[in-house]
Image (tube, rainbow, N blue to C red; front, top):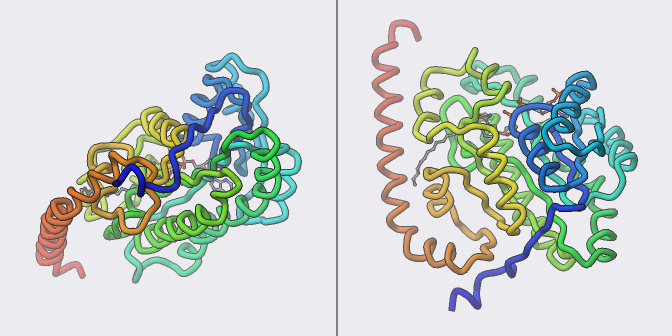
Length: 309
Ligand SMILES: NC(=O)C1=CN([C@@H]2O[C@H](COP(=O)(O)OP(=O)(O)OC[C@H]3O[C@@H](n4cnc5c(N)ncnc54)[C@H](OP(=O)(O)O)[C@@H]3O)[C@@H](O)[C@H]2O)C=CC1
Ligand SMILES: CCCCCCCCCCCCCCCC(=O)[C@@H](N)CO
């Protein structure tokens, strides 16, 4: 029965010979995805703000993949006109990877409104700008090539569960899930598959910066999920995209989180649908255990540091 119910129908999204555009492709997870996609024979374009870093990334991708045709696009995703211009320059996209993102962890009460807006503008509004700019030509492409297209969105495990120190970041990443679920309804008849990717802490230049200011409690709670290397996240992400998966977990804890937070999300795999139906009660129990542990940690941390508060 679940094989009949699981929707949308599973799809194969090939990468070879197709145009894959990756934002934030000059660093970390985005750079690892760009390199892996180029190795699989995709024509890759990377978009970010800093042109010098884009050029460096292009050289690295060319070196590692042996492909010459790597496009670079300098634009700030907050600037809708710049994004539209960049996408016109890049040409029609088959696979759009909205991976750009910023994270500045801090308790809401301490964080400036300016920094909160900065995260929401880049992580959420930037993704709207990209999808709006890419979609018309993407639809024409899937019609023309009769091959499925993909819109992949980089969330985070902090976009599946709210974490201490991540009020703004988690909000921006949870929002992407709403965007993605609704968008999948709107683009399924254009043969476009939406994927949401949920990595844990991943070794990247971004994480290194984040560690300089991340509250101790954020470190502890985020440590509940095993850290990963950018290349391994990139592989999981591309495998998810290629098989048209809607929810793409990256590690074991991520697989548990996917079941615990399955909600009303699309599910094309009957096997996963089955695991969700039988596993959700057990995963809810596991989730309660994790929350028990996190609240105990927070309460004892605050009790110990009372004098400083
Ligand atoms: N690393 C981690 O622990 C995790 C990361 N993620 C998510 O994965 C994604 C990538 O993270 P990571 O690889 O660590 O990031 P990095 O900080 O290493 O790289 C970020 C990339 O995004 C680009 N970027 C940032 N702001 C903008 C902007 N306004 N316009 C266009 N491009 C921009 C940067 O280039 P430039 O500065 O030149 O614009 C850079 O290429 C993010 O969405 C992040 O939230 C999710 C879970 C864990
Ligand atoms: C049902 C059972 C649940 C099991 C496990 C739960 C583990 C949750 C851990 C959440 C980790 C969040 C890391 C965010 C990383 C990130 O996005 C930043 N580095 C910024 O980029």
